[in-house]
Image (tube, rainbow, N blue to C red):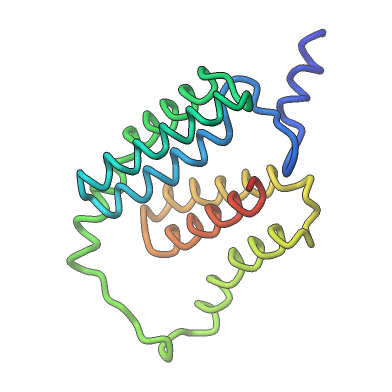
Length: 178
């Protein structure tokens, strides 16, 4: 029963000024995720190498200043990259079929249900970032969005609406943690 306080400490939201990442750095996971997103979209080897060198330098500064242990940063980067590589086939399988069939609709063709559907995740993100939803619930709001993304991927595959929710999730995570 002595491990319960340790576990509770790890799950207690400590946004904006606290750190509850006990072994894997939240800072490293966020910056690694951003680097993975950017390099997968850009797809240029020289840019990819430069970006990852910048990320590594950021990690070295964090360790040098005493904000993190080196193992925290390393595990955060490694874990994100492993997860990114495991999930990469989902995007590759979907993107090759989607690129040939993607049709862009003018804004005038959007229905009221389309507007509401896209407005809901963006509104929830905005409410969390400007702290109308209490700051202490930030981790739980992020977990809710992750669950919605997993549901969307399982039921419909990688589609534009799933990408919209992922962008909202990214914006929320940056707004809550930075």
